[in-house]
Image 1 (tube, rainbow, N blue to C red):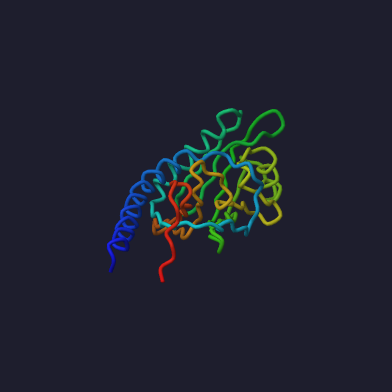
Image 2: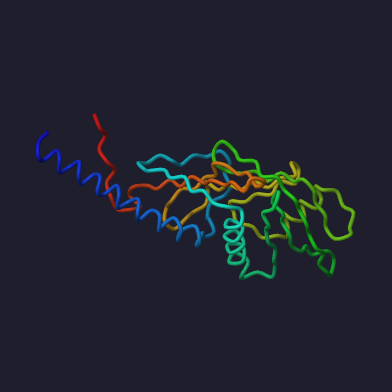
Length: 209
């Protein structure tokens, strides 16, 4: 093996190790500061069309719960609305909805269903709005109308579900996030993080023959 070829191989391994170390730090930072996306929800889309590396990040529902609510607080900071999410045996959405001249407490239990493209559907299991007796679809209509949500989150009153297009989030680092697995009862959650090489300012490795 020539000296030039050895140098290329050594450099490739060095840059790979360096990239992995940088990625670990950037993943943590980028997940903390998710910005609001500027694109509409587009279920089933796939934008993984450039050279990149993929990593699987595993976490617990406690950690994800803190992250989700930190994002919600930031998203609602300029509004008069307030709601939160609690990851328990299922996804518990709690908040308030305006009814006439007052507000009433909202409680929705949802089952997360991971889609093949890495998005997730939150299927409504039970729902209540104070002591009012309203059809589930009507309450979902109120949620869609009155609760501000990111553009990559879509409420469907007819199907009684919320579509969370995780793959459509516009993350500052240009990382591409998708959900691999959610099992709240077993406290086992996994996300795929796809990192485009251009994000790290490096050229993709040449194909090996």
